[in-house]
Length: 219
Image 1 (cartoon, rainbow, N blue to C red):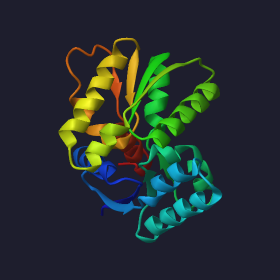
Image 2: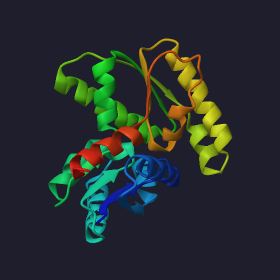
Image 3: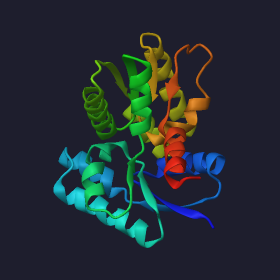
């Protein structure tokens, strides 16, 4: 019998990379995708995650549970810092998509490059990195690049333009850091398209997140 996993998305481009990662690594898992684009637009409009947005996200997790999900993966990095608050109000596990990636990065490097295409995602992931670095007692030097024009291109269906902008940022960051992270799930497909000139590891969240889901499901 297939086990069900809920995926809560704040942007449409995050859906396909996760579908692809599950199809490759966990084909027997049934996915329930829940999209609420207001999650991102509201946090950008308000400049922070409000208690009301935490309640909104908690409701979406509950809907996934009602649909049979044994756990929920939050695909929006902007909400990773409040995942524990959502977990406290939920009856099933709630996972941050980027936590495993961040922990692996901190275990492998101290000078870390981070490329993002959404301002809120960059801000919240930087917050998570510093939080986890403090938790494990390590110093980290973050070098961040934001390319909002890439997300605009992707949302308009210009994927090649998006990919070119992000990969150029990866090359730039790789030239002066020990490791580069792709901040959002919407960039996950680029982990396999990194130019040969890049000589440092490039991490993306979908593949690592699916590995964690499989571990928790015992599959």
